[in-house]
Length: 323
Image (cartoon, rainbow, N blue to C red):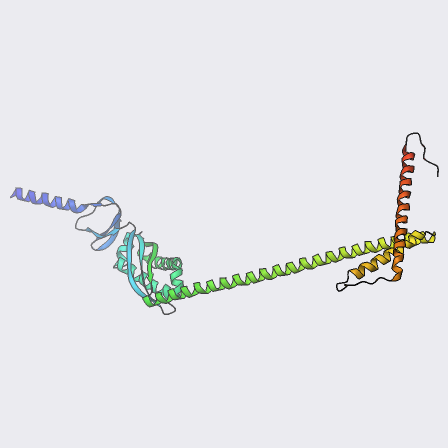
């Protein structure tokens, strides 16, 4: 009898010892309840509890966890129905709050995230919801993190995975995109034609300006040539007049002969002139030409005399004549 009691006491001691010693794994925290009331939290490692009085309440995972958000239908501000799903990354920071402030932690997080997805996307047009996914994620994270803070949680990230419009709306968006691209192509083509027309007009304008400047330059040079010719004729006339004043008959013949020659040149150069009649006085031209020859001969002799005199003056030992 004594041995049986001893065995029962040993077994009871082993049970009490197993109930008293608890090992919490890394990444978890366990809550301790005494007669059903929370007292403290066990950290990873070996801990000792008072059997019968104390017991383990909740085993809380303290590592960052991923919670998928199921797909749901959301109506945007412009009444487009889209399917949206996502994922939430959260971590428990306070095991006691996560255990006792909310009954079903994951279900509460899912309900909160899905509700706020409908709220955020409902305030946007379809185009905004498709192009501003970062804005949606930031708004969801801010709202959900504030709401879950009393539960001892920290929402690290909320990512929208897919936003899927209905098939007919996708086809309409494709047609709109195609129309926009066709419109831009037509605008670019029209802009090209306009620039080409402007460049051609600029080229024509520049060509006309250069042509006018060329004509003006040619007119200036022609007027200058005629001015030089008039000066030369005036100078020749003055020389002939001086010779006539000194009684040189050859100068008179030269003057008359040049006029005859100019008149004959005009008569011969007429386009419809076939027969030319000369007056009787035309024979006098021969005399005038003889006078021209004499005039040229005397001019040449005079030039030769001037050269000889100049050469004599330049010989060594000769002194130039005094004026």
